[in-house]
Length: 320
Image (tube, rainbow, N blue to C red; front, side):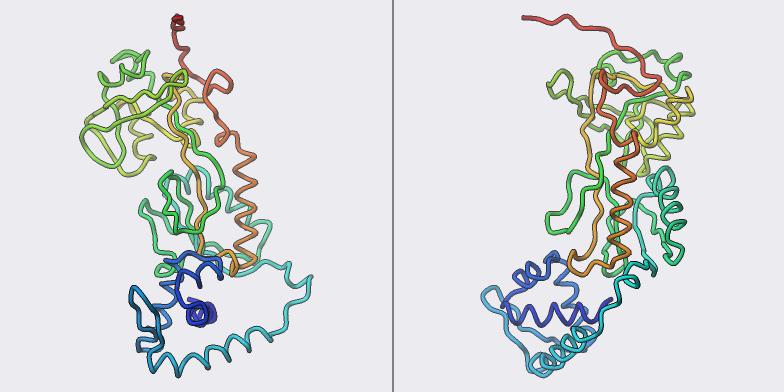
């Protein structure tokens, strides 16, 4: 963890009178500023600030450490800046956290191309479905696909993640093809995260539609559900970036293309905008451009841009 940034959080908190004001000035989340301050106190081995709901004040140890931190920041500010041509050389190690499925189907090839263009950069991938603590796990960038992002986090929206209902030809031959969203309640649906019934939500003709689905298989990894769907286990609601190749090959069939599942945001989460390393900024820009150029993230639902292999849906008569 960067001790200079931690010292800057400590000094700015004292100068501004609160952690919230310090976080705003340093352009980082309050949670991140809190972690930097806590780490500063762990390094010092003592509490540096008295905290209460009304005021914030220095302890005796904090009074003694404050001028030393100011000296450290002054020395850091006097360090010569690299020349323009030197500053453009990207180097160092970045640690990226994301889900296994996103890494396998999309991020790994993108990272390989980035490393090919920047041979002095190294990337360490941390895979898993749980949200990570950037500071404690030394993560530079976390990629998350969600619409429930903590507002205290600093994040850049990189793309939209769209989903498609799909099943294997073998499953459809044995169990029939659902023609309406409501028909999903009669099928074996492969659900995410937990066993039991789950609510799948869609928009059809501009109207929200939800159906309670259930099945005999659930998982906390969408890649596992994708493979189960290919094997004929049931109907899955899959991200387009994962399912598109299986649909194009005929291993899966896209269903209910008149209904659109909610779009989720793909976010790059990091510690601070102001103290972002040049290499991390470069990688974020690269990933944003890569997302924008990949049609898997631009799928907007039929009829304008149908998924290859989709089953045509019967036309419903409009009522006055």
